[in-house]
Image 1: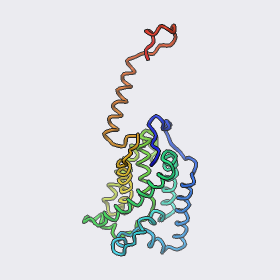
Image 2: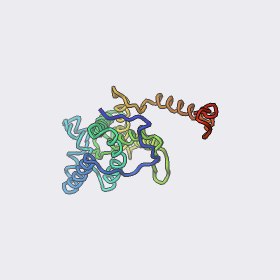
Image 3: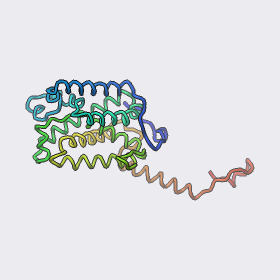
Image 4: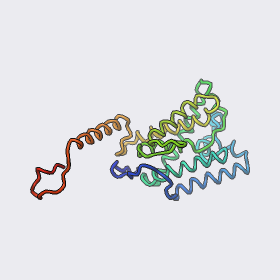
Length: 254
């Protein structure tokens, strides 16, 4: 099980950046880079290792639910995913521990692949294009990390293009973009998997029997914010005075 810190034990910094690479992150990034080079030298590998829902259903190529996470379609594709994995994954691994971090990464990535296959079977035009598509990339797992990061550090400042915003708002925006893009003919292939990563991550984190002390339930989060606001309002009604005699307790309110 992961190590769940309390809110007070989490770092209070209002922004995030690059943390040192752990052995697990080096391994994940290294495998992705090696597979990118392999598919560049042998393009036919992408079709065999990428996720083709039709082949998973008809030919039982179930390994594609795992291997597609390590295949990327281009330089910018792998660069964005690996930078996001580094930026968001490093601190989550430090909090959770390597074992749970890797488990979460593969659960969200494989789960996003499974949802993509299921979505391709639905009788909706934009989603039916998924059935014969070759889906590649670590986006499902990376978007799962985005959601986890926003749940643990909702007030951290993230720059989306040039606009600063809290992490929770950032994830809402990218989630909305993934959802509406998955309904279009042009962006449905990639974004359906990203949306799947967000959904799997949320369900997985909120369904743990020994849930985290950080509230992941939306209603519990609302109650936490309300209590925090009430406490802050109550503090404003009192003044704190310094000085005075040690036994003059009437002059000092804490």
